[in-house]
Image 1 (cartoon, rainbow, N blue to C red):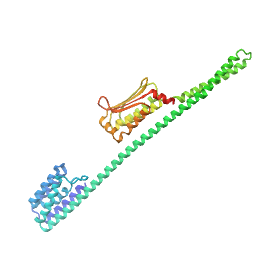
Image 2 (image 1 turned 135 degrees about the vertical axis):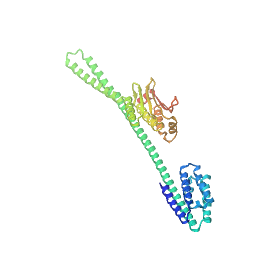
Image 3 (image 1 turned 30 degrees about the vertical axis):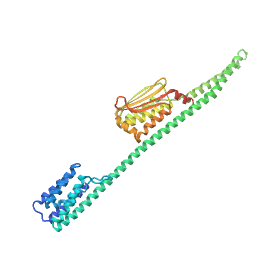
Image 4 (image 1 turned 120 degrees about the horizontal axis):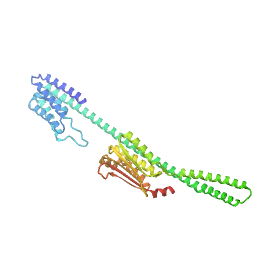
Length: 382
């Protein structure tokens, strides 16, 4: 719209020059040719867009009839593409040189008043062209800056989310470790004391089994029942505290369901395990969340599969999608690969192995994690 208004102003000035120059019947030809050349400049792509301008400027050198419309051509001739650290190319320089020659020719061929008007309106056209070009470049730079800031904001938000997940992960691990410590303390101290008390009461009952007084045996039996009940209660509490597993299947089902609802991607979930320790549960949950997010955001996947399998010596997680492996590879190799490095750190911290790359079939992306049980058991006993 800015260009159209500029050209309308310059065209009105050119028509005014024609009127002052006492035009003949062929002046309309110059007007039409100038409008066609300016229109072709807007329509054609580089490097052909400057050819209509060159042709019209050559006609201005041959027939002075075309000189009054020269300011409109000068407006387009100054619209060469600005490149950082570079000047105009040869196809862009030619109309500039021809425009200078045409203005000199106008001073020689036209009368004083029309010649002065051609120079004045050519200067006005140059200023309008420079102003509009500068405004557009400034708006483009501002848009690029806004896009860059928006991208940095998204990256910062993703990093903050990852940091929050790491914090929650570490808090959960610390909670599980503390629960395990409390359970061991109760088991080693209170549990053993109650067991010893139960054995001592049983020994007293055996020692006084032949006594005529049955009240003592009844009292000892009541004490032993109380101690056994307390011991059973302690064992139950210790079992609950020491329970180092979380329901990974429920977590994954909830995560997959929520992800399918939000992203529209179809996710097939397979859970083939009896139980998974708390650290592995938290690590696998975080890996699945990050892998599915990458499948949508980077690979633009439409379907994915999540499979968790328990083997005698390890747990194994596999996440595959049908997205674009090239896009996922580019994302993992750049600054946006923070999610993959976070997944790898979680798995390696548990003594496991991590792999992320194109699927063996050549289509889609694959995330593979394996965590040995022996390492996890050692951490649970620590």
